[in-house]
Image 1 (cartoon, helix red, strand yellow):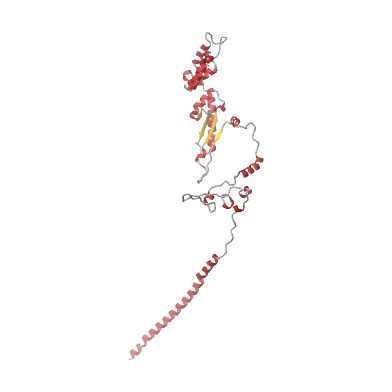
Image 2 (cartoon, helix red, strand yellow):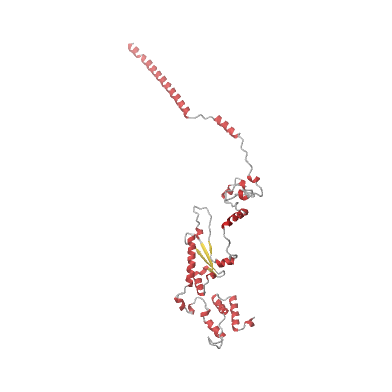
Length: 335
């Protein structure tokens, strides 16, 4: 009994200690939760959906400002367009009193989009500032910086006589990372061969050097250069070629004086036996250098040279026939 009495209260004491431990633990947890709630209230704001909904309704019900009508409806027909659109700028539909339309049409028989809220009209560059009155006004303002037109260049013929050299170049505007187009480096130089004032030897030598670059119908020599990367370099190279051709054509090599009739590249009437035969026929019974010696007409020599150099055609044969009859004195009979 003593052992039982001594050991009996042990379970009760254990339960009381366990209960007190649970109470202490629950009290500490409640305090921790309370502190955590306070910290959360201080850290996060409260989301009030009802207040935000009321605010949205209030915004929707707010009165909108009155939008003024487009400027085009208030423009006068005799206004100064240079003051409205003074320079290049992006398209503005309210400032252009024109019913412009541009854009892709998805349906058939449908008009393109109008100018309002049209992004296509704002993409392309416009020239609405370059109207005839504005251009005239700008030209009047630039006259004070210009010099009078030089006398003697009133017509195209006079200008070509004074400035026979023509340079043709091209500039391109495109959307690429570089503004330099490869085709813009090409330079074309044109010159009338009659402006060089070449003699017969120099003209023949120049024509053989240039080959197909000469147009006999227009008497035009064309040199195209595109080897250099820059336009200025190609222009300088074209002028260099033209200068070299001119000086080389006027140069007479020593071996050219020893050329015989068989070595000639063309028919030369002055160095051919046709001239001596025609002179013998025209001055029958006379010796060269005697009184009454008549030279062969230059027209006859030109007709013979054209017949051999240009080939036989209707014009050359008729010209040769006319000169032969005139040389023999049958010109009136042929008519």
